[in-house]
Image (tube, rainbow, N blue to C red; front, side, top):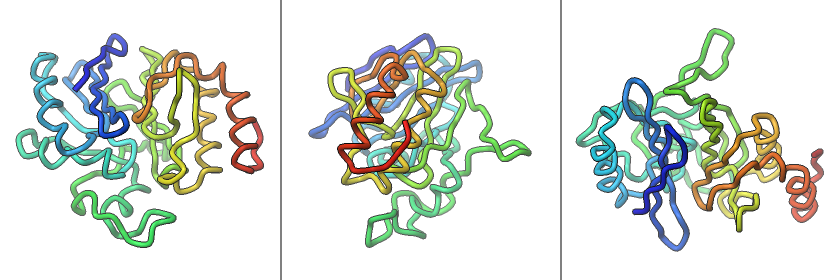
Length: 230
């Protein structure tokens, strides 16, 4: 497992199974937050790194979405560290197998029903900040996909909202993306937030992604035959 310090408060942990699979460890005043949980075999390395970090106990797991390569280590982690797990409420019935993910014939039972909780919302229905991370709903790759923005570090943990190649934005993997047009619209969050660094599960980081947005959306929408405004 490769460990990289992303910013003052964030580390990335990466393993490879044909492609990279990345999760993130975020430190805050109350301890450690894990963003995504990768594949089952990653559990030991994740926990060992958190222990070495010596930044406090793990307090929670935040999920960008519920696909199996993002939740795989959760059961093993929770067997020794019983912490709450959060995902967007829209995502819960898909990851728990009540509904099949769009474009899939069969439901996926990726987590037991009731294990994950909905991300907290305020009275206006806006997602609340957790451990220095501001969640934003970015559907398309999955119905309840969420990204997490660390405002202080200006780092966006983007899950599968994009892939990347040689530091350039690329569309999410078509085979696993429920609605590519919606995913591309959600990608405009990089223009809105203007992060310094974009972290991606299955690709290397992209620096100053907002600078690439206009070209990315124009060329990608055209190549996918998707009518979309830049």
